[in-house]
Length: 185
Image (tube, rainbow, N blue to C red; front, side, top):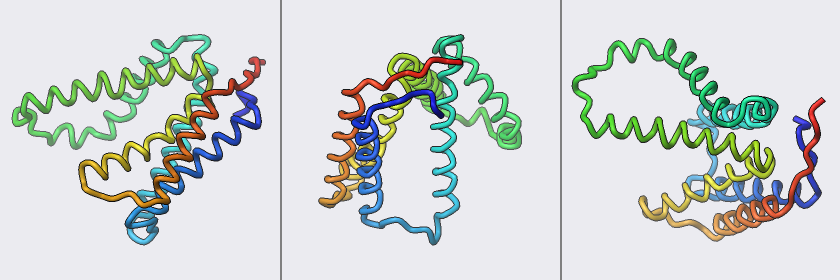
């Protein structure tokens, strides 16, 4: 988006990290299949592009509104768009049958996982920049790989372990070098 300039080292770190993600995904036991899941795969790619765009564009608003106000505005805007689309399911939901533990899970998800997560993300974008914040998204496949190993008994292959190393080294490189901010016009 042209909001930051960064050194060759940061670019190398980003490329290494992305190559590591590709290795983790491509060398999974089932591999990449476009046969049955291509629509979902395309939706995930589109969501990633939207998230990247939103992260880059939000830096313009962060200076004016700050992380807390921007997070609140994002939550309100997202809710305003999701509720009308979800109305048929909201109406059909048997609300009395929902267990208290499920409401607790909803509260945890809404307040900590989502609202607090968005605030931390906005704060990081505002403090350390888009490139140094966004590269942390590449840690997600590592968490998924670990969860698959620990919870599902899936065994990572050497190529996936190499991918983990690439991601971690790439994140370290990006985090250790400071991008050069471009002033607003």
